[in-house]
Length: 356
Ligand SMILES: Cc1ncc(COP(=O)(O)O)c(C=O)c1O
Image 1: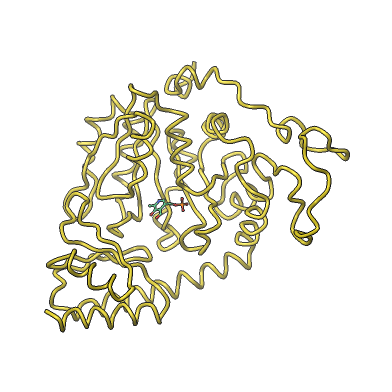
Image 2: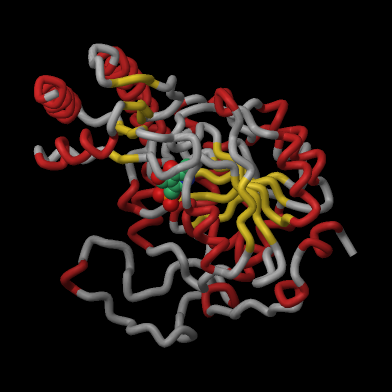
């Protein structure tokens, strides 16, 4: 029995995944095995054949992301965004009513919600001062846990985790739990990616997405990177045809050389605009603190977050109140928008200050 078998619940080990038509036969000429309508709708002429089911894991896309991330195709799982990746990990590795995950607030909310939805314990080990990981706190909770979620750059703090700390946790969890690093924003600081560590650590999983730097949040496309053995377990609990054909077409284009160049130009613009926005925020006397950011948003603390939110919402400017998260009293998060959007936000912040 391998360590992965030991951490994979018995019902998942024994699960025989649904043998979808596309998984049973991947090549052929006369396709009569999936009860599809053989006629493509004439209204959709020009689009790929939507009367046919997509491949279970579209090769074009797994290859495209593998090339971009420097991985092998069998180390990539395409998902409907990171959110689906989190759901698959929870359902594949945690037993309802028995297992736990660890999360490190303030952080992205879905790790905890996915656990709670599946009746799995969510153990909170809050980040420490300057958003460092509480490594000792995490190690103490390890024996009870199957998944440890770490987010870098972190949402909503915009901070990076120390790679040495992440490695300590991965090493302590070896053979017992998977460490899942959420790199939704890593294109803004690619040098902090843990992808190169995947070959060293078999219990590391990295989650990536096209929703942020690639500008395709509406597409719903993300990727889990891990050993082929872990990918195989996750495939068991996946839907039979998770990735719609139009998503495959658009995502493959985004991962072409041209698409990656365009993403990198956006990252450059957004990074400059973020730093300008941060300078603008410094002008306001009601802002107490502006947190440094390694992503496309800025977290800042005000005297009264509810009052600022209400004022801005009344002017149709929507940012996010983060005050409910531990350690984030009266903080708000603003995303880096277009020049016009930033200007409108700035003018309304000025109007708020004038109203005080
Ligand atoms: C840290 C983090 N992870 C994951 C997600 C969701 O990503 P996706 O759109 O790929 O589901 C978000 C979205 O805001 C996020 O901030």
